[in-house]
Length: 124
Image (cartoon, rainbow, N blue to C red; front, side, top):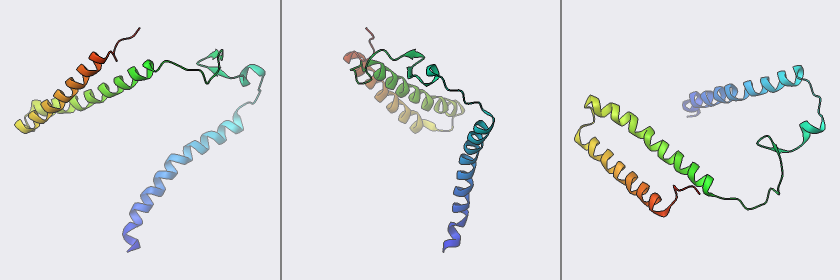
């Protein structure tokens, strides 16, 4: 029975080797060939290239993250629309496929209208 799992285990082993080996080789080559000259400026903490000017535990505005999440959400919906449009043009999905995508778009439009009504898309 264990022989049936041998191809799966071999596939997983090769995948781990392909994923880990380049990282280890890159670290080793960097360690062997790279220079290590630390100075106070290199070792200082920074935030986006700027010096840290406030406490890291300060409160921050969540609107930026809300807009980012909404962008990712609508970007994924577009990723679903493009293959559907290509298949729709060829006529392979039929009327049921068309109706299912119209239902999906209706849910998307209702969600967009809700976010717009709540003011989630407004930036002050």
